[in-house]
Length: 117
Image (cartoon, rainbow, N blue to C red; front, side):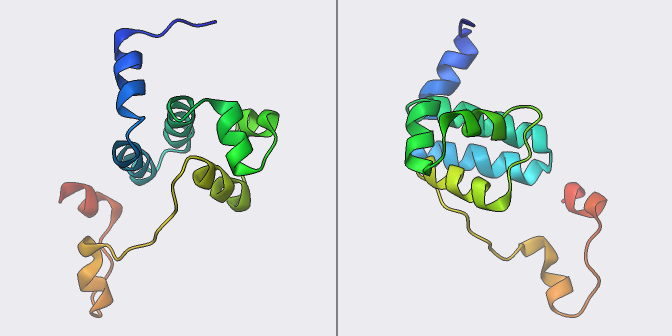
């Protein structure tokens, strides 16, 4: 079994706080990197009682949770939703203030423009 570094232990403690975990997952989603999101979800799952406990709360088999969150994982939306629920979280879609011009009839900001803001 792999031992945890001080960083991993500190992060694990922080991720036990649902507000911190939600912000951590949100940042991973906004990064737009599937691998980063899956890693973040694995870390939160470990902090929230371990993979077996999250799998039980998500109503999926532990093996399927490991597979979905592996570096080769590509969970379907339903599985993703169940895992998020198993982590004690929920998904929410909110307006993006950076896209206000688009909603008012302007052009959408490019990805580069969004990262400059």
